[in-house]
Length: 336
Image (tube, rainbow, N blue to C red; front, top):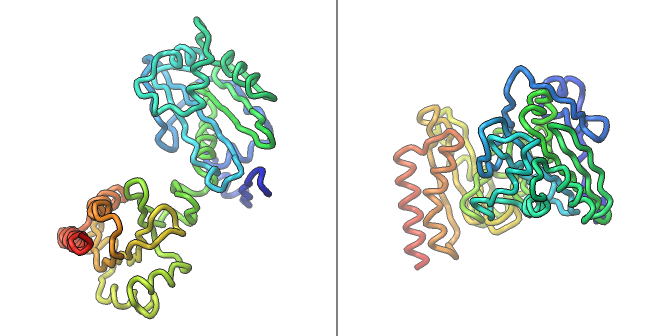
C-alpha cells in the first residue's frame, strides 16, 4: 500500500471462522471500539501465546497490555508482544505501573512512557492514556472498567493500544485470544512466529532460531541455486536421492542453515529424518557447511540445533549428535 502502510488481505469462509473463533473474532469484528461489557466467564482465560510477564503486583487476576503498529515496513506486521501484570486487574493497573520495574530492559518504550504519565494516587491507567493521547495528537480513547482501548494517529499511520484484564478476557475469550494473536502474527491461521521476511506456510514448516542471527528452516524451491553451489550436487533431487536412500519411514527434511533472513548467505545444508529411528527421534544423515567466517559461532551450531529440535519434539539420535559435533569441530579447526 505505497509507503504509508501494509495490509494483509485474508479470504475466509464461515466454516473456518466457526472452526477457529479464537483466531478470527478480532479481525472480523465489525467496528471500533470493542465491547467493554464484562462479567466473569465460566472458564479462566488462557492466552494463546506466552505473554511477557512483568513484575508481580498482587494476588488477584491479571492485566494484559499490547500495542500494535504499522510503520510501513514488511516486518512490522505482527511481532507486537503482549505484556501481562500477573496478580492485578485493570482498575489497579496504574498502581502496578508506578512500581519500579525489576528489569527496565524488558519493558517496551510504550509502557515506559505510560508509566511516566501515571499520576500520584491514580489506581487506573485511563488518565495516563489520555495524557499520552494528548501528547501524541488525535487520539480515540474508550474506557471501560475492565477494558481500555486507544487509537493514536501518527502522521498517516495508526497505532492501537489495548489494556484488559482477566475478567474481560474470560467474558470475551475468543475476542481476547484473537486480539493477542493479531498482535503476534499477521496471519490468523498460522501458529508459527516468523523471522524477517520469512515465508509463511503451515505448522509442519520447520523454522529454528539459532542464537541472534542464524536460522534453520525447510528448503524452498527458490533455494536450489544456493544448495547446488554449496554441495556440488547437480540438482536438489539428486542430492535428496543421495541423502535419503534407505532412510526408513521417517519424515525426510532438507534444511537450510542461514544467517539473518532467507535472502542472506547460505551457511549450510542439513539432511534429517524426523521420526526415525523412533517416533520422537531425529536422524541426521547429511551436513554440509560453508567455510566458517565466525568459527566460534559455528561451534555452537550443533548444540543449538539439538536444543531447538528438542523444543520441536524431536531428539537427535546419539549417533547424529556425535556426527554433528565432530563435523563442526573439524570445520572450526580447518578455519583456524
